[in-house]
Image (cartoon, rainbow, N blue to C red; front, side, top):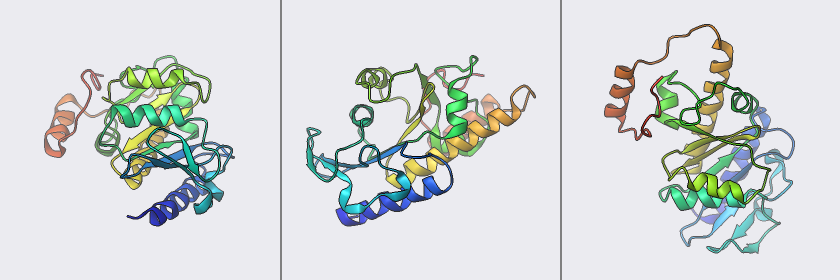
Length: 220
């Protein structure tokens, strides 16, 4: 996919996420890593529903703005995911309601923010880490991401929102949607003692689909 097509894809998928209420107002940001080590990223204070391909921020491999509008303040967050997950080519960060709600609950395990509720959650997201609260744009969030050592492709930022890395932008968006739906399921079933996938069922999925789940990622 060439740069022009990537720009169009960012705008198209951003609009889809916005129109379905997955990130309100000017919240959320998307980036795609390019073959030259640079990346395309959504601008600061831009609504994902109204992006313009030519105004997307183009950064070089050192994170300097080459063209387009000023980039999102969450560049450190995206950079840390690319640095620790070398195979990732896209990062999506949203303020989706149910994922944010789960990030605020007291019982959440930082090593596995959601239990193994459905096979597609495991297949798309693996396990999801929960990081403490950081001010939006705080460079310290990069150190927290690096502390996960690349073991997680999906992360909840407490009181803020989810961030997902993927091999492609489409894969990252699909994983983000699966994460949000699983968070919604968790809230719907909270306190009802639902049946989760058993360790044997998780092991079967891991074997058949070659999943790389972090150690201790789904013990409960």
